[in-house]
Amino acid sequence: MGNSLVPLSSSRKLLARAALVDLHEPSRNLLSECFRQFGIDAVSMNSEHAARLAKEKFEACVVRVGSHAEGVLASVRGSRSNNRMVVYGLGGSVKEAMKLSKYGLNAVFQEPLERPTALKLVKATQMLVLHEFRRYVRIPVMTEVSITAGKAHFSATSVEVSSGGMSLKTAEDVSPGQPLEVSFSLLTLPRIWVRGHVSWNKPAQKTFGVRFDSRDERRLRIKEWVDSYLES
Image (cartoon, rainbow, N blue to C red):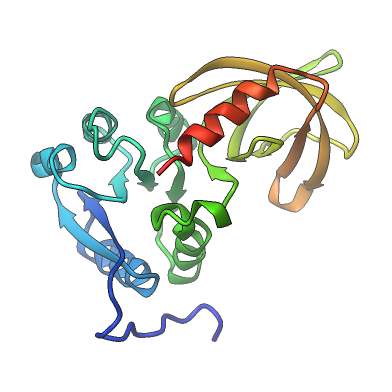
């Protein structure tokens, strides 16, 4: 099966470490297997010991979305060695995840945790975790995006952002070619407004893509942010 986990050879070197914070044993075991398949070692800890994240080098972190998550992520982003790590949330509602967006939450594992979808998410983000930046120019990151399309105003959640555009999720109807303006902020990027148009949409998945207007010089700030994020 394409989504089955292939046992990692004991001789294969683990290239990165991911901290699993406050995860229950079933989730911890499943995610450990998923990460290990891509050469990423999983280290379990609870939020009381998350100070390790400010002292030891980790390339990724999975934290349960909830009351302890903000303190953990504040420690992560305040660390000189780990402030660029890939951060995953586990569970929680979209509203709860959005409260953590100021910490640059990259992606969320949904609960109940299922092996195929968990493996798919790890596979989609592994290049960032392993610092293979030249092969990955889109940054998975969740933040609230305000959209103006003509007289309509609505919100969406970002999925990925690049220097040329972004993908988003919303229940609103959009059409390819539709002009709009998006407004959002990122971890180290203050709120920005930039014009663009809908480049594609997948109504069944409630996702669509935006291509930034090449004539809008404000998009250069996004490019600078992406370049800075991908610096090793």
